[in-house]
Length: 294
Image (tube, rainbow, N blue to C red; front, side, top):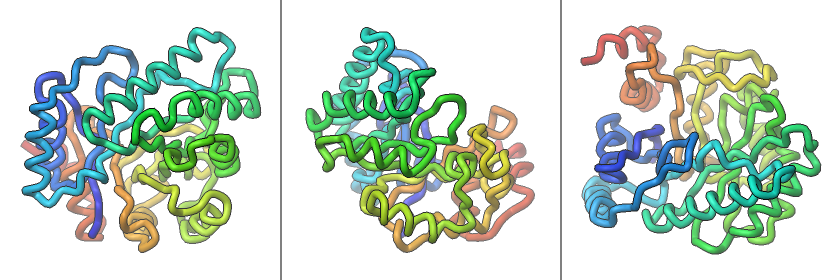
C-alpha cells in the first residue's frame, strides 16, 4: 500500500488531532509536522487527551501511526561548536524534541545535520556525532538525518558525509536517513537513475536505514546546490521520475511526505498532488485547479 502524506500544521489548541484532520482532508494516510514553530523555541505542553483522540481516529481509519513523522526545528545546529553554549543549546533542544515525540508516541524525527559555518566538514561531522551520542537512546525515537542540497556550508550533501556521521554514532538502532528528492537533485544526484542511487545507498549505508522520503520536485538544475522546492511534475525532476521513486518496491513501507510549496503562497496543493500521485497521471492544469479551489 502506498504510504503518502504531506507536511501539516500542529496548532496549540488542536495539536495532533488537528494535524490528523488536516492530513485526512488531503486524502493522506500519513503526515509530518513540527511540534512548534521551526524557527524558534516556543513550545506548549502536549495535551494527552488530544493525542489519544487522534490515535483512536487513526485506528478507525486504518492509519499506521508508526509512519507518522516529526521534523526537528531548523534552529538546531549540531555541526558548529564554535560557541559551546550554542552547541549545548542545540543538544538540549533536540533532546526536548525527542521527549515531545515520545509523549506523542512518535518514533521518527527528521533532522537537518547542520551547517559548519566555516569550521569545515570534518569538524562538523565530528560535532554532529558528538551531539547525537549525548542524547540518542534516551527515548525510543529514531533520528533521521536528512540529505541536504549543499547550500552554503550545509553538511549532509553527499552519501559519504551521511555515512561518516552514522559511522561515528554509537546507538545505531536510533539513527537513520531521510531522503529528499529536491535536495538530492540539487546536490548532484540524478533522480532519473534512482535505482542506481539506491544500490549505492545500500552498499554504503544500508537501505534499511531509510526511514522517510520527502517527495519534492525542484526549481533547479541538477547540482545547483540551491534547495528550492517545486510542485510535483512542474520542476526539473519531473512527474514520471518522481512516480518511479514513490512506487519503488524497495521503499514500499517507507512513508513519502510532500513538502511542495503552497500555490501563490496561499493554497495548499497536497490534496490535488496526492490524488495525481495515486492516479499516476500528470495533470498540467493542476496549479490552476489549486488556485480555483474553494
